[in-house]
Amino acid sequence: MSTQDAIDPPHTLHRTLSPLEVMFLTFSSLSPAMSVFIYGDGILHQAGTGTALAVLIGGAVAAVATFLYAELGAAFPHAGGVYPSLKGILGPLWAFPYITMMILVGPTQLAYAVLGFADYVRVLEPDLPQIPVAVGCLAVACFVAVQRIKTGALVTGAFLMVEAIAVIVMAVVAVLHPVRPLWEVLSNPVILDDGLLKPLAFGGLGLAIVTGVYTTAGGNWALYFGEELKDAEHRIGPVVSWVGQLAAISIAGPLILMVLSITDLKEVLGSDAPAATFIGNTVGHGVAAVVSGALVVAIFNAVVVNMMCYARLFYATGRDGIWPAPANRLLGHLHPKMRTPIAATLVVCVCAFALMLSGEKLLLVLVSGENAIEYLMLAAAVLLGRYLGKTGKTFKAPLHPLVPGITLVVVAGFLVAEWLDEDAGRPSLILLTALCIGSIAYYWFRMRNKEGGFQREVPQE
Image 1: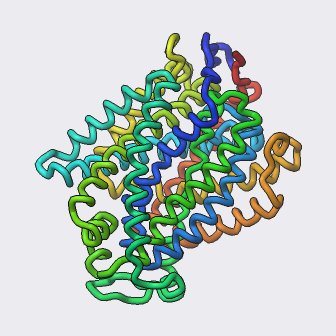
Image 2: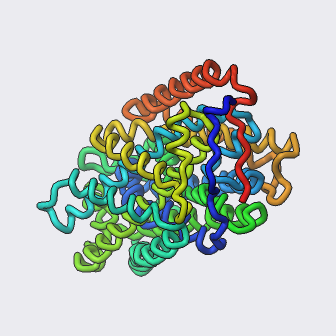
Image 3: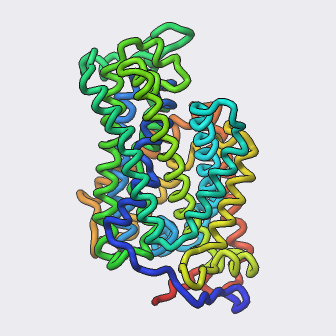
C-alpha cells in the first residue's frame, strides 16, 4: 500500500470496557423490546400463530451461529464486528464484499429503526410529523454515540433497564392468560388471510423462520467493541456466546408465550401493532401505553448503540486504508480526548439520513438478504480458520465441524426462502450479489498494485 493511502492515527481505541459493560451495549443494540414488539409484529403478520415455530427454530439457528461469531471474535478482537476476522482468515479480497455490503446495510438498518421510532412516538402524539421526529432521533443519538465509550455504556445500560420492563410485562401477561397448548400451535399454525384464519403454507413458514433468525440474533454486536474490551482475546468469546443464547431466549420466549395467550386471533393478527393490541385487550390500554413509552426508549437506545457499532466498522475500514486517501483520513480519525471515531459516526449518521428519505420499502429490500451472505462467510471462515490454526486458541465453537456445517445447511434454506419472496427477498439477493461482485472488481483494480492489499496491522496501544 502506498504511503499516501496509509493512515497512521496518533491514537487507538481504548481497552477500557468490562464484560458487563459490553453486555449492556450488546443487549441495547439487539434490543429485546424492539425485537419482540416491532420485528415480532412483522412475524405475526407474516406467519400468524406460526410465529411460535418460526422464532423457536430461528432462535435455535441464531444461538448456533453465535458460537461462530464467538470463535472468530476471540481470534481477532478488533473494531469492526466480524470484518477483522474475515480479513484475517479469508483474506482482504474475500472480506471486501462483506465490507461493502455492511457499508450499505448498516446505515439502512439505522434508517429503518429511526422511522420505527417516529411511528411509535406518533402513537403517543399522533400530530407529530414522521420525518422531523426521525431526524431529531438521529441527531440526538449521534450526540450520545460520540461520547466516551464508558459514558455510552452507562447511558445505554440505564435505558436497557427501562426497555426490559416492556418485555417482562409481555411475558408475565402471557403466562397469566394462556388459552391454547403449545403442541396445537406448533402442529397446526394458522395465518389471517382476507379476514379468515387459514393454515400457514410451508413457504410462508420458511420466510418466517428467516425473519425469526434475524429477530432473535444479537450476540455478534459485541464484536464491534472487541478493541475496547479489556483482555478481549480471552473474554470476548464467552461474552458473545452467553449474550447470543440469552438473546434468543429473551426474545423467542415472550413471543411464543404471547401466541399461546391470544384470545381473539383475528383482532390481534389483523392489528397494525399485534403485540400492543394483545396487551391492551388482556390487561387494559393504560398498561399498553406504558409499554409503548418503554418501547420508544428501547428503539432510541438501539439506534444509539447501532450507530456506535457501525461507526467502528467505518473507522476500521478507514484505518486499514481501503478507500481513497481523503476518505481514509476522515474515517480513521479518532477524537484526541474521547478516543471515539467521531468523524465515522457523523458519516454513518449522514448516510442513514439520506437512506431514510428513500422510503421503508426500499430499506426492507436492502437488508433482507444480508443474513444469508454473512452466515455463509462465517461458516467458511471458521472452517478455514480452524484448519489453518488461526482460530480456536482461546475459544472454540463446540462440536466442530458440526456447527459450521449446520450453518451452511441453514444458508441454503435462507437462499431458497429469500428467492421465493418476490417482494423483498429476491430483489435483495440480486442487489447484494451484484454489490459483492462489484466490490471484488473494485478491490482487484484498485488494490492489485498495492503491496499486501489493505492488510495494515491494527495499531497497538
